[in-house]
Image (tube, helix red, strand yellow):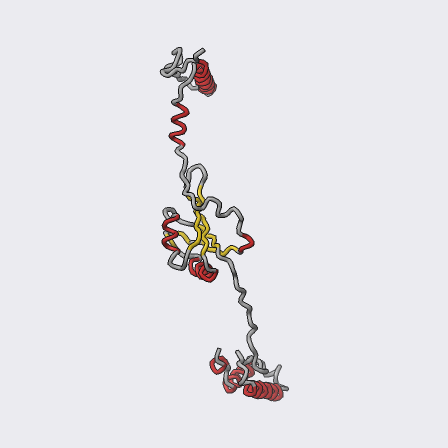
Amino acid sequence: MCPSRVVITRSRQLRRIQRLISHRSPARFKMGVKARKKAITKQLNKGASDFSASKGEARDFLPLEGGPAQKLPKTEVRETKATVLYIGRIPHGFYENEMEGFFKQFGTIKRLRIARNKKTGKSKHFGFIEFESPEVANVVADTMHNYLLFEHLLQVQLIPPEHVHPRLWKGVNRWYKPLDWVKIERKRQDKERTLDEHKKLVEGILKRDKKRRKRIEAAGIDYECPEIVGSIQAAPKKIRFDVD
């Protein structure tokens, strides 16, 4: 920072001091005003002389209350080696291919993963991405945090290397194929049953129907429940006979 832009001139400081003194109560500061003004002027002269003597050393600012010029404390910039980013609040439709196409504009991507439900395969709306360079990861964290994307504010945070789970990238190269639960349930329902299995199935249905009728009668509802079709049949359409 240039000292000439920060330092307030001596005349401006004197005018400010005179303005403050004029606003004070004269009964309280009647005595000692000249002495106080003289002391402040002396401090300003000393600060100006110290500032002019230390022109070789760059100073950041000159205190308003007087005194020598001072420097701002230096802040140490820590170098981070984190290359893994956590990305939260991922909108619907912004999946692996879309994320890779969007984030590769910053740099080379090593690995990418979106958390998905094991049963349905749907996105859990958070994921992880790893870059080759820590500098690129830092830029992405600063740029994309709270970035508005499809009415969602992305939450992007750097993950320190010591906090990265060792199994984070397990199976990252395998595309998850969700199970077809409708097909599985259809296959279970349409499987061939023996006579004993069919009899057990019908007994369960009749037992549940009997409980339902009792609940309706206990509620005081006058309703005649229809009979279950097929309950008196001896065998289903598909029967698997045990061969002796």
